[in-house]
Length: 301
Image (cartoon, rainbow, N blue to C red; front, top):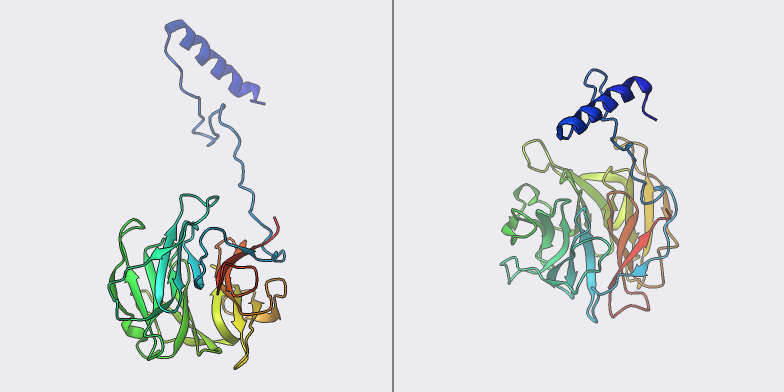
Protein backbone atom coordinates (compact mmCIF):
# COMPACT_ATOMS: atom_id res chain seq x y z
CA UNK A 1 0.00 0.00 0.00
CA UNK A 2 1.23 3.49 -0.85
CA UNK A 3 1.75 5.58 2.32
CA UNK A 4 -0.83 8.35 2.77
CA UNK A 5 1.90 11.05 2.79
CA UNK A 6 2.88 10.01 -0.75
CA UNK A 7 -0.66 9.21 -2.01
CA UNK A 8 -1.96 12.76 -1.70
CA UNK A 9 0.60 14.41 -4.04
CA UNK A 10 -0.03 11.66 -6.57
CA UNK A 11 -3.79 12.24 -6.45
CA UNK A 12 -3.26 15.99 -6.86
CA UNK A 13 -1.06 15.38 -9.91
CA UNK A 14 -3.72 13.09 -11.41
CA UNK A 15 -6.41 15.73 -10.82
CA UNK A 16 -4.37 18.46 -12.49
CA UNK A 17 -3.60 16.15 -15.42
CA UNK A 18 -7.29 15.46 -15.92
CA UNK A 19 -7.96 19.19 -16.01
CA UNK A 20 -5.48 20.13 -18.72
CA UNK A 21 -5.36 16.84 -20.68
CA UNK A 22 -1.61 16.27 -20.15
CA UNK A 23 -0.39 12.95 -18.75
CA UNK A 24 1.44 13.31 -15.45
CA UNK A 25 4.68 11.33 -15.19
CA UNK A 26 5.10 8.81 -12.38
CA UNK A 27 6.03 10.57 -9.16
CA UNK A 28 9.46 9.82 -7.70
CA UNK A 29 11.10 10.98 -4.56
CA UNK A 30 14.77 11.67 -5.23
CA UNK A 31 15.33 12.61 -1.64
CA UNK A 32 14.75 9.13 -0.27
CA UNK A 33 15.65 7.10 -3.38
CA UNK A 34 12.22 5.44 -3.45
CA UNK A 35 10.97 4.05 -6.78
CA UNK A 36 7.93 5.50 -8.52
CA UNK A 37 4.77 4.82 -6.56
CA UNK A 38 3.41 2.74 -9.44
CA UNK A 39 6.63 0.70 -9.90
CA UNK A 40 6.24 -3.09 -9.36
CA UNK A 41 8.30 -4.65 -6.58
CA UNK A 42 11.63 -6.16 -7.56
CA UNK A 43 11.58 -9.95 -7.91
CA UNK A 44 14.74 -12.04 -7.61
CA UNK A 45 15.14 -14.67 -10.32
CA UNK A 46 14.86 -18.19 -8.91
CA UNK A 47 18.00 -20.33 -9.24
CA UNK A 48 17.81 -23.05 -11.87
CA UNK A 49 19.04 -25.70 -9.46
CA UNK A 50 20.42 -26.34 -6.01
CA UNK A 51 24.20 -26.23 -6.67
CA UNK A 52 24.89 -28.91 -4.08
CA UNK A 53 22.17 -31.34 -5.17
CA UNK A 54 23.23 -34.57 -6.91
CA UNK A 55 23.36 -35.03 -10.66
CA UNK A 56 20.60 -36.83 -12.48
CA UNK A 57 21.39 -39.66 -14.85
CA UNK A 58 22.69 -38.26 -18.17
CA UNK A 59 20.27 -38.09 -21.08
CA UNK A 60 21.18 -38.20 -24.74
CA UNK A 61 21.43 -34.72 -26.22
CA UNK A 62 18.76 -34.66 -28.95
CA UNK A 63 19.26 -33.91 -32.65
CA UNK A 64 23.00 -33.16 -32.62
CA UNK A 65 24.35 -36.73 -32.46
CA UNK A 66 25.10 -38.79 -35.58
CA UNK A 67 26.24 -42.37 -36.36
CA UNK A 68 29.80 -41.01 -36.18
CA UNK A 69 31.55 -40.24 -32.89
CA UNK A 70 30.90 -36.83 -31.29
CA UNK A 71 33.39 -35.73 -28.65
CA UNK A 72 34.25 -32.71 -26.46
CA UNK A 73 30.92 -30.90 -26.24
CA UNK A 74 31.90 -27.41 -25.00
CA UNK A 75 29.51 -24.47 -24.90
CA UNK A 76 29.42 -20.70 -24.63
CA UNK A 77 28.12 -19.28 -21.35
CA UNK A 78 24.64 -18.65 -22.80
CA UNK A 79 24.60 -22.26 -24.08
CA UNK A 80 23.72 -21.14 -27.60
CA UNK A 81 26.98 -22.21 -29.26
CA UNK A 82 28.40 -25.74 -29.06
CA UNK A 83 31.82 -26.75 -30.35
CA UNK A 84 33.13 -30.28 -30.52
CA UNK A 85 34.95 -32.88 -32.57
CA UNK A 86 33.61 -35.53 -34.88
CA UNK A 87 35.53 -38.71 -35.66
CA UNK A 88 39.27 -38.27 -35.25
CA UNK A 89 40.28 -34.79 -36.37
CA UNK A 90 37.38 -32.58 -37.50
CA UNK A 91 36.20 -29.76 -35.27
CA UNK A 92 32.53 -28.82 -35.48
CA UNK A 93 30.18 -26.02 -34.38
CA UNK A 94 26.42 -25.78 -33.85
CA UNK A 95 24.22 -22.89 -32.75
CA UNK A 96 20.64 -22.48 -31.53
CA UNK A 97 18.36 -19.51 -30.94
CA UNK A 98 17.56 -20.19 -27.29
CA UNK A 99 18.35 -22.73 -24.58
CA UNK A 100 14.97 -24.43 -24.89
CA UNK A 101 15.70 -25.32 -28.53
CA UNK A 102 17.74 -28.32 -29.67
CA UNK A 103 21.05 -28.07 -31.47
CA UNK A 104 21.10 -29.16 -35.12
CA UNK A 105 23.73 -31.55 -36.41
CA UNK A 106 27.00 -29.67 -36.08
CA UNK A 107 28.74 -28.22 -39.13
CA UNK A 108 32.48 -28.43 -39.84
CA UNK A 109 34.46 -25.64 -38.22
CA UNK A 110 36.78 -24.21 -40.86
CA UNK A 111 39.98 -22.86 -39.31
CA UNK A 112 41.92 -22.73 -42.57
CA UNK A 113 44.43 -25.36 -41.47
CA UNK A 114 43.36 -28.46 -43.38
CA UNK A 115 46.66 -30.29 -42.84
CA UNK A 116 46.41 -30.17 -39.04
CA UNK A 117 44.66 -32.72 -36.83
CA UNK A 118 42.66 -30.89 -34.17
CA UNK A 119 40.95 -32.03 -30.97
CA UNK A 120 39.57 -30.82 -27.64
CA UNK A 121 38.04 -27.46 -28.66
CA UNK A 122 37.05 -25.21 -25.75
CA UNK A 123 35.26 -21.89 -26.22
CA UNK A 124 35.19 -18.84 -23.97
CA UNK A 125 31.97 -17.68 -22.34
CA UNK A 126 31.40 -14.92 -24.89
CA UNK A 127 31.99 -17.29 -27.81
CA UNK A 128 34.79 -15.13 -29.20
CA UNK A 129 37.89 -17.27 -28.53
CA UNK A 130 38.54 -20.94 -29.16
CA UNK A 131 41.35 -23.02 -27.64
CA UNK A 132 42.16 -26.48 -28.94
CA UNK A 133 44.90 -29.09 -29.39
CA UNK A 134 46.72 -29.23 -32.74
CA UNK A 135 49.11 -31.89 -33.98
CA UNK A 136 47.25 -34.92 -32.67
CA UNK A 137 49.46 -38.00 -32.75
CA UNK A 138 52.69 -36.06 -33.28
CA UNK A 139 53.67 -33.25 -30.90
CA UNK A 140 50.32 -31.87 -29.70
CA UNK A 141 50.34 -28.18 -28.81
CA UNK A 142 47.78 -25.69 -27.59
CA UNK A 143 46.41 -23.42 -30.31
CA UNK A 144 43.95 -20.56 -30.33
CA UNK A 145 41.55 -18.85 -32.77
CA UNK A 146 39.62 -15.60 -32.32
CA UNK A 147 36.63 -13.89 -33.92
CA UNK A 148 35.01 -10.49 -33.58
CA UNK A 149 31.54 -11.81 -32.77
CA UNK A 150 29.60 -15.09 -32.71
CA UNK A 151 28.32 -14.35 -36.23
CA UNK A 152 31.78 -14.00 -37.83
CA UNK A 153 34.31 -16.71 -38.77
CA UNK A 154 37.27 -17.56 -36.56
CA UNK A 155 40.58 -16.07 -37.66
CA UNK A 156 44.01 -15.37 -36.20
CA UNK A 157 44.59 -19.12 -35.91
CA UNK A 158 47.86 -20.36 -34.47
CA UNK A 159 49.78 -21.73 -31.50
CA UNK A 160 49.73 -20.02 -28.10
CA UNK A 161 53.39 -18.97 -28.14
CA UNK A 162 53.92 -18.81 -24.39
CA UNK A 163 52.70 -22.41 -24.02
CA UNK A 164 54.98 -23.85 -26.71
CA UNK A 165 56.78 -25.97 -24.12
CA UNK A 166 53.59 -28.01 -23.56
CA UNK A 167 54.05 -30.78 -26.14
CA UNK A 168 52.01 -33.60 -24.64
CA UNK A 169 48.60 -32.02 -24.11
CA UNK A 170 45.62 -34.34 -24.55
CA UNK A 171 42.86 -31.84 -23.70
CA UNK A 172 42.49 -28.17 -22.82
CA UNK A 173 39.63 -26.44 -21.01
CA UNK A 174 39.25 -22.65 -20.86
CA UNK A 175 37.35 -20.86 -18.10
CA UNK A 176 34.43 -18.71 -19.32
CA UNK A 177 36.34 -15.46 -18.63
CA UNK A 178 39.54 -16.81 -20.25
CA UNK A 179 41.45 -16.28 -16.99
CA UNK A 180 42.98 -19.77 -17.00
CA UNK A 181 43.39 -23.00 -18.94
CA UNK A 182 43.21 -26.48 -17.41
CA UNK A 183 45.37 -28.97 -19.30
CA UNK A 184 45.45 -32.78 -19.23
CA UNK A 185 48.25 -34.88 -20.68
CA UNK A 186 48.63 -38.44 -21.93
CA UNK A 187 46.14 -40.84 -23.51
CA UNK A 188 45.36 -42.45 -20.16
CA UNK A 189 45.66 -39.35 -18.02
CA UNK A 190 48.37 -37.60 -16.06
CA UNK A 191 48.70 -34.72 -13.62
CA UNK A 192 46.27 -31.93 -14.49
CA UNK A 193 47.86 -28.47 -14.75
CA UNK A 194 46.54 -24.92 -14.71
CA UNK A 195 47.96 -22.01 -16.76
CA UNK A 196 46.84 -18.61 -15.47
CA UNK A 197 46.44 -15.63 -17.81
CA UNK A 198 48.33 -12.56 -16.67
CA UNK A 199 47.37 -8.90 -16.77
CA UNK A 200 49.08 -8.50 -20.15
CA UNK A 201 47.07 -11.32 -21.68
CA UNK A 202 49.82 -13.96 -21.81
CA UNK A 203 49.60 -17.26 -19.97
CA UNK A 204 52.12 -18.24 -17.34
CA UNK A 205 53.78 -21.63 -17.13
CA UNK A 206 51.32 -24.41 -16.24
CA UNK A 207 51.27 -25.35 -12.54
CA UNK A 208 50.20 -28.78 -11.33
CA UNK A 209 46.75 -28.97 -9.73
CA UNK A 210 47.46 -30.85 -6.52
CA UNK A 211 45.68 -34.17 -6.14
CA UNK A 212 44.07 -34.26 -9.59
CA UNK A 213 45.27 -36.88 -12.06
CA UNK A 214 43.07 -37.75 -15.01
CA UNK A 215 41.54 -36.83 -18.35
CA UNK A 216 39.28 -34.06 -19.69
CA UNK A 217 39.20 -31.84 -16.59
CA UNK A 218 36.12 -29.61 -16.37
CA UNK A 219 36.09 -26.74 -13.88
CA UNK A 220 33.25 -24.56 -12.60
CA UNK A 221 33.38 -20.83 -13.35
CA UNK A 222 34.35 -20.05 -9.74
CA UNK A 223 37.02 -22.81 -9.82
CA UNK A 224 35.63 -24.43 -6.68
CA UNK A 225 34.47 -27.66 -8.38
CA UNK A 226 36.38 -29.93 -10.75
CA UNK A 227 35.25 -33.01 -12.65
CA UNK A 228 37.53 -35.33 -14.59
CA UNK A 229 37.77 -38.87 -15.94
CA UNK A 230 40.15 -41.66 -15.05
CA UNK A 231 41.07 -44.60 -17.23
CA UNK A 232 43.46 -47.41 -16.39
CA UNK A 233 46.10 -48.16 -19.01
CA UNK A 234 44.63 -50.47 -21.62
CA UNK A 235 41.16 -50.42 -20.04
CA UNK A 236 38.00 -50.11 -22.10
CA UNK A 237 36.12 -48.07 -19.53
CA UNK A 238 36.61 -44.82 -17.67
CA UNK A 239 35.01 -43.22 -14.64
CA UNK A 240 33.94 -39.68 -13.74
CA UNK A 241 35.24 -38.13 -10.53
CA UNK A 242 34.69 -34.81 -8.79
CA UNK A 243 36.42 -32.68 -6.18
CA UNK A 244 35.62 -29.44 -4.39
CA UNK A 245 37.41 -26.78 -2.40
CA UNK A 246 36.34 -23.84 -0.21
CA UNK A 247 38.53 -21.23 -1.95
CA UNK A 248 40.77 -21.08 -5.01
CA UNK A 249 43.79 -20.91 -2.69
CA UNK A 250 43.02 -24.38 -1.30
CA UNK A 251 43.68 -27.71 -3.04
CA UNK A 252 40.77 -29.77 -4.31
CA UNK A 253 39.58 -32.26 -1.74
CA UNK A 254 36.75 -34.72 -1.14
CA UNK A 255 37.68 -36.46 -4.40
CA UNK A 256 34.92 -38.98 -5.11
CA UNK A 257 33.46 -40.92 -8.00
CA UNK A 258 30.15 -39.74 -9.49
CA UNK A 259 28.39 -43.09 -9.99
CA UNK A 260 25.10 -41.71 -11.34
CA UNK A 261 26.99 -40.20 -14.28
CA UNK A 262 28.95 -43.36 -15.03
CA UNK A 263 27.87 -46.23 -17.28
CA UNK A 264 29.74 -49.24 -18.61
CA UNK A 265 32.13 -47.93 -21.24
CA UNK A 266 34.02 -44.67 -21.68
CA UNK A 267 32.54 -41.58 -20.01
CA UNK A 268 34.21 -38.16 -20.02
CA UNK A 269 32.94 -34.85 -18.59
CA UNK A 270 33.31 -32.08 -21.16
CA UNK A 271 31.62 -28.88 -19.88
CA UNK A 272 29.80 -27.50 -16.84
CA UNK A 273 27.41 -24.55 -17.06
CA UNK A 274 28.33 -21.30 -15.24
CA UNK A 275 25.47 -21.86 -12.77
CA UNK A 276 26.75 -25.42 -12.03
CA UNK A 277 23.36 -26.84 -13.05
CA UNK A 278 24.22 -28.82 -16.20
CA UNK A 279 27.08 -31.19 -16.94
CA UNK A 280 27.82 -32.24 -20.51
CA UNK A 281 29.65 -35.46 -21.34
CA UNK A 282 30.70 -37.61 -24.24
CA UNK A 283 30.14 -41.33 -23.80
CA UNK A 284 30.09 -44.54 -25.82
CA UNK A 285 27.43 -46.12 -23.57
CA UNK A 286 24.71 -48.22 -25.17
CA UNK A 287 21.59 -46.47 -26.40
CA UNK A 288 23.36 -43.71 -28.33
CA UNK A 289 23.41 -42.86 -32.02
CA UNK A 290 26.74 -44.57 -32.65
CA UNK A 291 30.30 -44.43 -31.35
CA UNK A 292 30.57 -41.59 -28.83
CA UNK A 293 27.62 -39.27 -28.28
CA UNK A 294 26.84 -36.09 -26.37
CA UNK A 295 24.91 -36.38 -23.10
CA UNK A 296 23.78 -33.89 -20.47
CA UNK A 297 23.14 -34.41 -16.75
CA UNK A 298 21.32 -31.86 -14.60
CA UNK A 299 21.03 -31.06 -10.92
CA UNK A 300 17.62 -31.11 -9.26
CA UNK A 301 15.88 -27.71 -8.86
